[in-house]
Length: 339
Image (cartoon, rainbow, N blue to C red; front, top):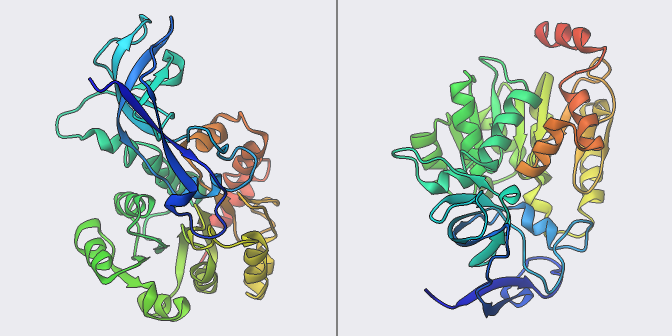
C-alpha cells in the first residue's frame, strides 16, 4: 500500500474562471483511524457545479489552505469500530483526497447490485438523480403530456431529468447543449425530441424553433440568456425549477445581473413576485397569487435539509412550492384547470 496520502487544497479565491494556480496537492502520511472510526481509501470523486460557488468567499464556502469537501465513494481498509468492516464500500463527503478517516455517522453503506456500477451512486442514484427527480415531481409537479425545456441537458442533472421526464409521461422534451455531438447523443440515447447547440445563435430564436408552441416547465441549469428565453416561452401556469446558473458562476455580481435580466422581461417577470439571493430563489407568495412558482432543487445535502424541514429557509420554500399551506386546494384547482 502506498504510504503517502494526497489532498487537494484551495490556495486562492478565483476572480472569473478558476485555474490550477488556485489549488495545490498536499502530501502527508496516511492517517490512522482512532477508536470509533475507520480509514477509507477513496475510489471515486464527484466534481460538481456547486463547487465553483464554494470557491468564492461566501458563508459555508471552502476554507483556504484546507482539504476540500465533495461527494466520494471509497473502500474501508482499516477499522477500529464495529460499525464499519474492512472491505465495505461507503459513501461520504470528505472528497478531494485519496484517504479519509470517517465515523459510522459520517458515511452511508452502499448496496451492490449486478450491473450497477459504483459511479451510479454519484450520479443517477445519488444527489444528481435526486435533484432531477425532486425538481420534476415535488417542485414542477410535472403532469403527463406537459412540454419541457431543460438547459445544459447533457450534464448530469440534465440527462437524469430527461430520463425521468420520459418515465413520467412528459410531452415534447427539448433541451440545450454545448455541441452538436451532445445534442445528437441526447436525441438518440436519452429520449429528447430536439436539442439545440446554444452557440448557434440567440437562445430565444433557437428555443422558438424547437418549441414553437411554448413550454409548460423549464428546468434551469444555466441561467442567463437561456433563462430569459424560457421566460418568454412559458405558457399559462408554466413553472420554472432553478437548479443552477452555471453561465454566471464565473461572473461577478451575478445576482444583480439576474435581477436586471428578469426586469427586462415585462409582464411575465413582474408576475413572478420572487425574491432572489445569490444561492437560492424561492417563492414569497402562495401559488394562488402568482402564476409561477420558482424554487431551487439543490445539492443532495440541501435537498435532505429541505425535505426533512431541518432548515428554516428550505421549509419556507417547501411550503410555498408544494402548497403545503391553507391555500393548497385553491392551488390544486388552478393547476388542474389551466389551459
